Image 1 (cartoon, rainbow, N blue to C red):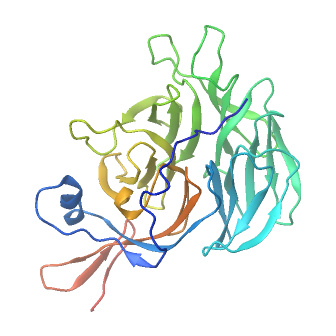
Image 2 (cartoon, rainbow, N blue to C red; image 1 turned 90 degrees about the vertical axis):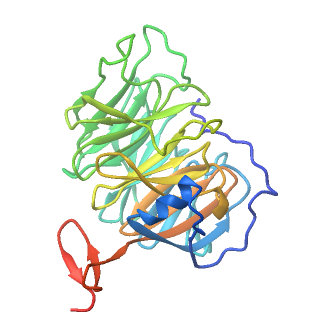
Image 3 (cartoon, rainbow, N blue to C red; image 1 turned 45 degrees about the vertical axis):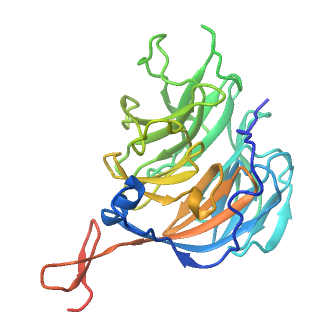
Length: 339
């Protein structure tokens, strides 16, 4: 059976009234989290936060300014506004495991039990994209070349046998597998233990959240051809802190990576070369067990293990130049605010 990652929550912890705000930290020079503000690349603003039930939110997907949200244990998928207002509740005819934007108003979805990849079209029709039998689809994403990447497993646990199959496939819109990533980098010849979520970066790298046990996971970076480039370490840990435990991943238009850290109660920003840059949001901001992460343009949607949905806006930080003018940097251009 396909189970989302279930977490225990402390309902009395971090309950705050939702409001639009900037996240700022007082600087005393003693904390790594405080020091990172000086070198941060983006400014984070909270758009809204609301509770959508009390259970785990394993997947969500932005759609035209709103967001489809799926709650664990429910057969329904609910389209919500950024303020949490219900637009509609829909049963798609199957239990959604993961959903991701396919562009042009289309939503890509995995049906674990029926071993199928499906799509919600712009007109509201549910169509079959690919039959993945005998393997079950988990996480998926659209790629820059208009194909799809799909995590495929033969079972839902992290205990493998010599016959276990854990892989990643690139499929086209006709449902044909055009590339399979199996790898041969671990001691037993396996690249994946349980590939759970996947996204393609703008630089064509492939990022995979791979669960290695019921409580531990890692973030793998693969080349376009499927070769392992590195395993991301996330923010450097202090002694006694829980290890980096990624649960979902997405990228922005400048190849920066956002990754939710389940045990660290944070969303981290990594540079295009996968080094830690800054925390986007942390436990002190009311986040608890971040599990589902999605981004469209500059807006981030975050689903948590306690039913909380948080909507954030990511803005490029303005940096002063030597002449005192404010300068906004991007990969393609530099704009002086005064001139």
